[in-house]
Image (cartoon, rainbow, N blue to C red; front, top):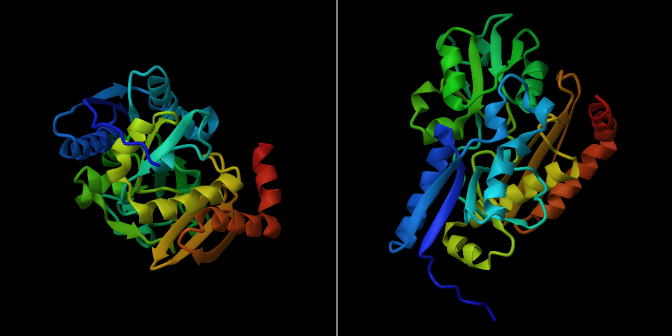
Length: 314
């Protein structure tokens, strides 16, 4: 028998303070206000370690978890009821005591080519400098465009665009979802389809995190859950988790749901793009966890185990 929970009187949402993170938190805030008009719904802005350290790549300073730890501390200390994250920034393994309570409907999951001078990757001249914060994108670019120069580009979305506009890069690769959410679609010169640049697990979706014991908060968030997106990202995250996925591993995983059939594609690569081990699988719409593990096992059997061991030893 399910337990009914009363409507909230107050909800505090923990969020990073970048413009995109605040957009995401305000989006969830607006949806909750529509559901619970009598409730006071507030934001708690937090600057994370990942936001403060910009001179080094994420893979060298501890990974994507640096964007969520301070928000989880606010949940643990009961200063906030929930935290809103870009799902691709959430570690694949949740810390004990925390739960991913809701995954919202996905925005465009693809990568976007942004440049002030060139229409697309194929238009870039030899030696052109492309900025990206992702080892996944770097490996894809190095594999397909060895004539280009690839450089790590940290900072929030506005910082990256500012560096592009200052002439420091010929082009940058960003998540299309962030640009769309901030009304910057006009900056997108080309959307890179999954066949060209397979997205990161969870890219384009928002994840809402709570303390696992907060059954009341889970009930409040029930209307925000998108079942189709949740099924897809469950498969993507299971694939990444089975391969030890982190920002230290160039890895892509992307699933689509077509009726009752779930299709999953994934790859793991060396940072220089010289070795790419890719595969795909399909199954029932509720088989996401099993499909993710199955695809990971297939890649491991075809050489990903040796590649991952090499990456771990660096």
